[in-house]
Length: 220
Image (tube, rainbow, N blue to C red):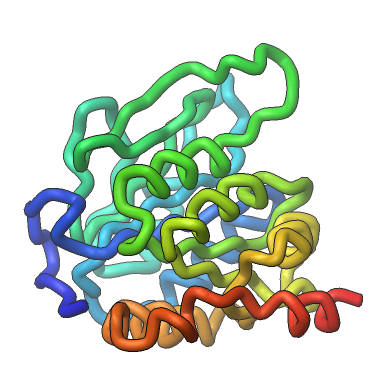
């Protein structure tokens, strides 16, 4: 799957999507990930970091110095762009439909908020086979349910090595879901994702089979 140049404004169906989910410890993990992502790959990057819903997010300026790609907060109705990093706003759920972002208010009231599951489920419908998901440091299990839907549509899933994560809950629960293709340190993630996109479709059998047995051993 050839990658288009930076800033490509074609519809989401024309380029890969990298969905990144994190919670506690996620800011530092995202910084390290962007630091290691050399160049400006022609994929659209979406970051879902658990945020305090009543406070303005500072993620855009905090992450912008760690990448050459433009970084912005996602807005309702705005097109998903290759070569850009777009970040969920506080207090919102974020989905992708017909190549544009759709923002909504959580329907769970004061209960558990699972914004990464919400995004992944929308991406599974919109463009699962062109989506790579990265699970970084965090508590809880956000993302684990959405990964099942994404994997069913041949998405690619990478989880941070729980031993490296500041908070291992999110990556551990993702691994336990049986949907994770690779368990990696952050520094190894960019090459793995880029290789997947470059060879997507050449060996579906290899990338479509979760390494469940290996994952269970790694977190036991």
